[in-house]
Length: 154
Image (cartoon, rainbow, N blue to C red; front, side, top):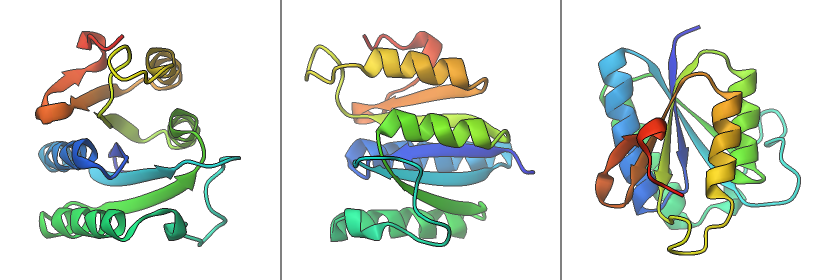
């Protein structure tokens, strides 16, 4: 299987910056790009086979996702999408543990713990690190990119 860059999206501005960075990384490393959007909800596990859960996305979010898919395809990067319902980090962990060819995870971070009350971010990131051997890259507001080991997010 081809090595893959996973970009976990919230489809906000920082998520779009993460997607752009993930696209550049995929092109540079000749990897595939997997855009993953997680819609908050009870019970994870993703959609049933063949079912996209677009009903959880606003028109603006759908448009942004479509734009990122088009941009990546025009750049010649093999792109696929995965839409899931559940808790953000739980769904990422579930996906990366079932897909061993994922080499990079790119996360867009809008809210930093302590600053906005995004409780549990650090512990969730630690859980992700424990489940994933590849590189975790964090795209923060204003497009700053850090490797997880360098991150100062508390």
